[in-house]
Image (cartoon, rainbow, N blue to C red; front, side):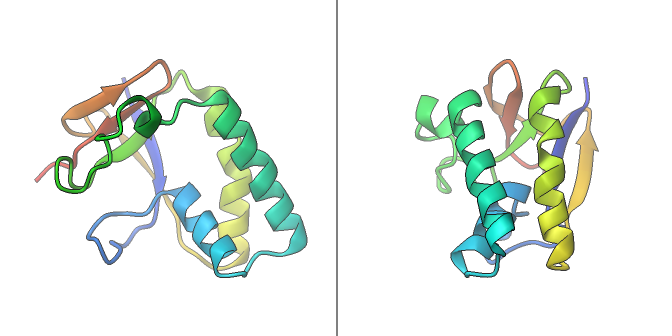
Amino acid sequence: MSFVRFQSPTRNERGTFTGVFGLVNGLARAGHLTVEQETFRRTNNDWYDANFINPAHTDPSVYDTTLNPGAAAWFKPTARIFIERVDGYLLILKAHEIPCETVWADDPGPIIYEDAFQVVALPRA
């Protein structure tokens, strides 16, 4: 099975690769989105919140930087409905010239969380 993740090609200040949602949410926090982009972001973030499991709600330690440094979520290929919605986020990043790459992995690292549509894995050394 191949997993997919959409992320910055460069490490952030914590040494990890910020995912697509974090990148767009960062633009929003900085006030850089147009009204249309903010409407898309809010509508789709709300849709994900209502339809996609947040691993941290199931296991609050999953993204704990001490226990699980660098933990990152990866979509399973069965998550098509969730993956398809990423395109709008990618268009926002492109409009702001923020690079984002699609990373595929058969083995994303040691899995610390799993549900029907995603895994959270620790990075390989």
